[in-house]
Amino acid sequence: MTPTGLRPIKRVMLIFPPMFDVRHVDTMACPPMGIAYLGAYVRDLVDVRLLDCLVAPNAARQRVTDYIELVGLPYDDVAAQIRDYAPDMVGLSCIFSGQSACVREISRRIKQDIDPEIVVVTGGTHPSFLPEQTMAETRVDYVVLGEGELTLRALIQTHNSGGTAADIAGIDGLAFRKDGSPVVNPRRNWIKDLDAIPFPARDLLPMERYFAAKVPMGLHWRKIRNTPIVSSRGCPHRCPFCSSWL
Image 1 (cartoon, rainbow, N blue to C red):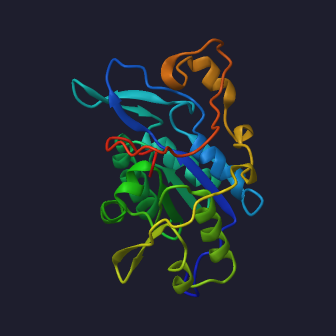
Image 2: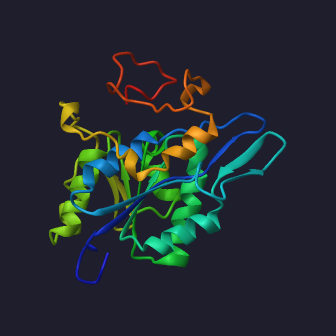
Image 3: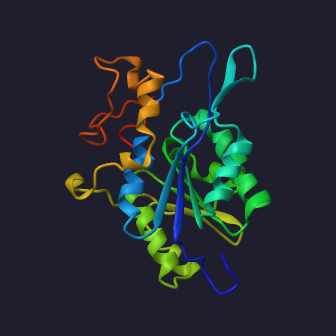
Protein backbone atom coordinates (compact mmCIF):
# COMPACT_ATOMS: atom_id res chain seq x y z
CA MET A 1 0.00 0.00 0.00
CA THR A 2 1.39 3.38 -0.98
CA PRO A 3 1.08 6.58 1.08
CA THR A 4 -1.72 7.71 -1.25
CA GLY A 5 -3.69 4.45 -1.30
CA LEU A 6 -3.61 0.99 -2.79
CA ARG A 7 -0.68 0.11 -5.04
CA PRO A 8 -1.66 -0.07 -8.73
CA ILE A 9 -1.23 -3.56 -10.17
CA LYS A 10 0.28 -3.83 -13.65
CA ARG A 11 2.40 -6.99 -13.41
CA VAL A 12 1.32 -10.16 -11.61
CA MET A 13 3.49 -13.20 -10.91
CA LEU A 14 1.61 -16.37 -9.97
CA ILE A 15 3.76 -19.03 -8.30
CA PHE A 16 3.25 -22.72 -7.57
CA PRO A 17 5.77 -22.94 -4.70
CA PRO A 18 8.15 -25.69 -3.66
CA MET A 19 6.67 -28.25 -1.29
CA PHE A 20 7.64 -30.65 1.45
CA ASP A 21 7.04 -34.26 0.39
CA VAL A 22 7.81 -37.81 1.47
CA ARG A 23 11.30 -38.99 0.53
CA HIS A 24 11.71 -41.83 -1.96
CA VAL A 25 8.31 -41.03 -3.52
CA ASP A 26 8.03 -39.34 -6.92
CA THR A 27 6.48 -35.89 -6.59
CA MET A 28 3.89 -35.31 -9.30
CA ALA A 29 4.86 -32.72 -11.91
CA CYS A 30 1.85 -31.55 -13.88
CA PRO A 31 0.55 -28.16 -14.99
CA PRO A 32 -0.78 -26.32 -11.90
CA MET A 33 -4.33 -25.68 -12.99
CA GLY A 34 -5.05 -23.16 -10.25
CA ILE A 35 -2.53 -20.54 -11.32
CA ALA A 36 -3.12 -21.40 -14.99
CA TYR A 37 -6.84 -20.58 -14.67
CA LEU A 38 -6.14 -17.45 -12.63
CA GLY A 39 -3.59 -16.25 -15.15
CA ALA A 40 -6.03 -16.76 -18.01
CA TYR A 41 -8.78 -14.90 -16.15
CA VAL A 42 -6.82 -11.74 -15.33
CA ARG A 43 -4.36 -11.33 -18.18
CA ASP A 44 -6.66 -8.95 -20.00
CA LEU A 45 -6.14 -6.62 -17.03
CA VAL A 46 -2.44 -7.11 -16.26
CA ASP A 47 0.76 -8.67 -17.54
CA VAL A 48 1.07 -12.18 -16.09
CA ARG A 49 3.96 -14.56 -15.53
CA LEU A 50 3.55 -18.10 -14.16
CA LEU A 51 6.29 -19.91 -12.22
CA ASP A 52 5.96 -23.59 -11.35
CA CYS A 53 8.76 -24.26 -8.89
CA LEU A 54 8.48 -28.04 -9.28
CA VAL A 55 9.64 -28.05 -12.91
CA ALA A 56 11.66 -24.83 -13.15
CA PRO A 57 15.33 -25.14 -14.12
CA ASN A 58 17.46 -25.78 -11.01
CA ALA A 59 14.55 -27.45 -9.19
CA ALA A 60 16.00 -29.93 -6.72
CA ARG A 61 15.20 -32.32 -3.90
CA GLN A 62 16.70 -31.33 -0.56
CA ARG A 63 16.73 -33.79 2.33
CA VAL A 64 15.09 -32.41 5.48
CA THR A 65 14.72 -35.55 7.62
CA ASP A 66 14.92 -39.28 7.04
CA TYR A 67 11.33 -39.14 5.80
CA ILE A 68 10.78 -35.65 4.37
CA GLU A 69 12.43 -33.60 1.65
CA LEU A 70 11.90 -30.14 0.16
CA VAL A 71 11.12 -30.41 -3.55
CA GLY A 72 11.36 -27.58 -6.05
CA LEU A 73 13.21 -24.42 -6.91
CA PRO A 74 15.50 -23.20 -4.07
CA TYR A 75 14.27 -20.09 -2.28
CA ASP A 76 17.18 -17.98 -3.54
CA ASP A 77 16.22 -18.85 -7.12
CA VAL A 78 12.56 -18.03 -6.47
CA ALA A 79 13.59 -14.64 -5.10
CA ALA A 80 15.81 -14.05 -8.14
CA GLN A 81 12.89 -14.78 -10.49
CA ILE A 82 10.68 -12.33 -8.59
CA ARG A 83 13.35 -9.64 -8.76
CA ASP A 84 13.81 -10.26 -12.48
CA TYR A 85 10.11 -9.81 -13.26
CA ALA A 86 9.56 -6.99 -10.71
CA PRO A 87 5.83 -7.65 -10.21
CA ASP A 88 3.40 -5.41 -8.38
CA MET A 89 1.60 -8.49 -7.08
CA VAL A 90 2.76 -12.02 -6.29
CA GLY A 91 0.19 -14.80 -5.92
CA LEU A 92 1.33 -17.92 -4.05
CA SER A 93 -0.65 -21.10 -4.58
CA CYS A 94 -1.01 -23.27 -1.47
CA ILE A 95 -2.93 -26.37 -2.48
CA PHE A 96 -1.16 -28.64 0.00
CA SER A 97 -0.32 -28.04 3.65
CA GLY A 98 3.18 -29.15 2.67
CA GLN A 99 3.46 -25.82 0.83
CA SER A 100 2.39 -23.59 3.73
CA ALA A 101 5.91 -23.26 5.16
CA CYS A 102 7.14 -22.35 1.67
CA VAL A 103 4.49 -19.64 1.40
CA ARG A 104 5.66 -18.34 4.76
CA GLU A 105 9.30 -18.19 3.66
CA ILE A 106 8.69 -16.73 0.21
CA SER A 107 6.34 -14.05 1.54
CA ARG A 108 8.92 -13.15 4.20
CA ARG A 109 11.65 -12.76 1.60
CA ILE A 110 9.44 -10.64 -0.63
CA LYS A 111 8.55 -8.22 2.15
CA GLN A 112 11.94 -8.21 3.86
CA ASP A 113 14.47 -8.57 1.06
CA ILE A 114 12.83 -7.60 -2.26
CA ASP A 115 10.15 -4.93 -1.95
CA PRO A 116 7.79 -4.51 1.03
CA GLU A 117 5.28 -2.77 -1.23
CA ILE A 118 4.71 -5.82 -3.43
CA VAL A 119 1.17 -7.07 -2.83
CA VAL A 120 1.32 -10.72 -1.75
CA VAL A 121 -1.72 -12.97 -2.09
CA THR A 122 -2.19 -16.64 -1.31
CA GLY A 123 -5.01 -19.06 -1.99
CA GLY A 124 -5.77 -22.74 -2.25
CA THR A 125 -7.01 -25.46 0.05
CA HIS A 126 -4.77 -24.81 3.07
CA PRO A 127 -5.32 -21.04 3.43
CA SER A 128 -9.00 -21.40 2.55
CA PHE A 129 -9.46 -23.69 5.56
CA LEU A 130 -7.12 -21.68 7.79
CA PRO A 131 -7.24 -18.01 6.72
CA GLU A 132 -6.67 -16.52 10.18
CA GLN A 133 -3.73 -18.83 10.84
CA THR A 134 -2.28 -18.09 7.41
CA MET A 135 -2.52 -14.34 7.98
CA ALA A 136 -0.90 -14.72 11.40
CA GLU A 137 1.97 -16.95 10.27
CA THR A 138 2.91 -15.37 6.92
CA ARG A 139 3.62 -11.93 5.47
CA VAL A 140 0.84 -12.17 2.87
CA ASP A 141 -1.50 -9.20 2.46
CA TYR A 142 -4.54 -11.19 1.34
CA VAL A 143 -5.95 -14.71 1.41
CA VAL A 144 -8.38 -15.73 -1.33
CA LEU A 145 -10.88 -18.33 -0.17
CA GLY A 146 -12.13 -21.11 -2.45
CA GLU A 147 -12.48 -20.32 -6.15
CA GLY A 148 -10.04 -17.55 -6.89
CA GLU A 149 -10.95 -16.07 -10.27
CA LEU A 150 -13.68 -13.64 -9.24
CA THR A 151 -11.95 -12.52 -6.06
CA LEU A 152 -8.52 -12.01 -7.64
CA ARG A 153 -10.02 -10.02 -10.49
CA ALA A 154 -12.02 -7.86 -8.07
CA LEU A 155 -8.90 -7.32 -5.98
CA ILE A 156 -6.83 -6.18 -8.96
CA GLN A 157 -9.63 -3.93 -10.22
CA THR A 158 -9.98 -2.32 -6.79
CA HIS A 159 -6.24 -1.61 -6.63
CA ASN A 160 -6.29 -0.15 -10.14
CA SER A 161 -9.39 2.01 -9.77
CA GLY A 162 -8.13 4.20 -6.95
CA GLY A 163 -9.86 2.06 -4.36
CA THR A 164 -9.21 2.23 -0.64
CA ALA A 165 -8.95 -0.24 2.22
CA ALA A 166 -12.67 0.28 2.74
CA ASP A 167 -13.33 -0.98 -0.79
CA ILE A 168 -11.16 -4.04 -0.17
CA ALA A 169 -13.32 -4.85 2.83
CA GLY A 170 -16.30 -5.43 0.53
CA ILE A 171 -14.71 -8.13 -1.66
CA ASP A 172 -16.34 -11.54 -1.37
CA GLY A 173 -14.20 -14.47 -0.22
CA LEU A 174 -11.21 -12.36 0.84
CA ALA A 175 -9.22 -12.30 4.08
CA PHE A 176 -7.22 -9.18 4.89
CA ARG A 177 -5.88 -7.22 7.84
CA LYS A 178 -7.62 -4.34 9.56
CA ASP A 179 -5.70 -2.53 12.28
CA GLY A 180 -3.30 -5.46 12.38
CA SER A 181 -5.99 -8.12 12.93
CA PRO A 182 -7.28 -10.59 10.33
CA VAL A 183 -10.74 -10.08 8.87
CA VAL A 184 -12.33 -12.89 6.84
CA ASN A 185 -15.12 -12.29 4.33
CA PRO A 186 -16.81 -15.69 3.87
CA ARG A 187 -17.13 -17.07 0.36
CA ARG A 188 -20.73 -16.42 -0.73
CA ASN A 189 -20.56 -16.24 -4.52
CA TRP A 190 -19.49 -19.09 -6.78
CA ILE A 191 -18.93 -19.23 -10.52
CA LYS A 192 -22.23 -20.52 -11.89
CA ASP A 193 -21.20 -20.71 -15.55
CA LEU A 194 -17.82 -22.42 -15.87
CA ASP A 195 -17.95 -21.85 -19.64
CA ALA A 196 -17.41 -18.16 -18.88
CA ILE A 197 -13.91 -18.97 -17.58
CA PRO A 198 -11.16 -19.06 -20.24
CA PHE A 199 -9.18 -22.24 -20.73
CA PRO A 200 -6.09 -22.35 -18.48
CA ALA A 201 -3.08 -20.40 -19.73
CA ARG A 202 -0.94 -23.40 -20.63
CA ASP A 203 0.95 -21.15 -23.03
CA LEU A 204 2.48 -19.47 -19.97
CA LEU A 205 3.80 -22.79 -18.63
CA PRO A 206 6.83 -24.85 -19.76
CA MET A 207 4.74 -27.73 -21.11
CA GLU A 208 7.68 -29.70 -22.51
CA ARG A 209 9.16 -29.96 -19.02
CA TYR A 210 6.07 -31.78 -17.77
CA PHE A 211 6.30 -34.29 -20.61
CA ALA A 212 9.99 -34.84 -19.86
CA ALA A 213 9.36 -35.32 -16.12
CA LYS A 214 7.04 -38.31 -16.73
CA VAL A 215 5.29 -38.01 -13.34
CA PRO A 216 1.81 -36.71 -14.30
CA MET A 217 -1.33 -36.35 -12.21
CA GLY A 218 -2.04 -39.66 -10.51
CA LEU A 219 1.33 -40.97 -11.77
CA HIS A 220 -0.48 -42.87 -14.54
CA TRP A 221 -0.64 -42.12 -18.26
CA ARG A 222 -1.34 -43.72 -21.62
CA LYS A 223 0.88 -41.30 -23.52
CA ILE A 224 3.80 -39.25 -22.28
CA ARG A 225 2.43 -36.08 -23.84
CA ASN A 226 -0.61 -35.58 -21.62
CA THR A 227 -2.13 -32.76 -19.59
CA PRO A 228 -4.90 -32.59 -16.97
CA ILE A 229 -8.28 -31.01 -17.64
CA VAL A 230 -10.99 -29.76 -15.28
CA SER A 231 -14.51 -30.70 -16.37
CA SER A 232 -16.36 -29.57 -13.23
CA ARG A 233 -15.77 -28.11 -9.80
CA GLY A 234 -16.78 -29.19 -6.35
CA CYS A 235 -18.52 -32.34 -5.15
CA PRO A 236 -22.02 -33.03 -3.78
CA HIS A 237 -20.62 -35.12 -0.92
CA ARG A 238 -19.07 -33.76 2.28
CA CYS A 239 -16.42 -36.24 3.33
CA PRO A 240 -14.64 -34.73 6.35
CA PHE A 241 -11.16 -35.55 5.02
CA CYS A 242 -11.63 -33.86 1.62
CA SER A 243 -11.60 -30.26 0.42
CA SER A 244 -13.51 -30.75 -2.85
CA TRP A 245 -16.79 -29.50 -1.43
CA LEU A 246 -15.23 -26.39 0.14
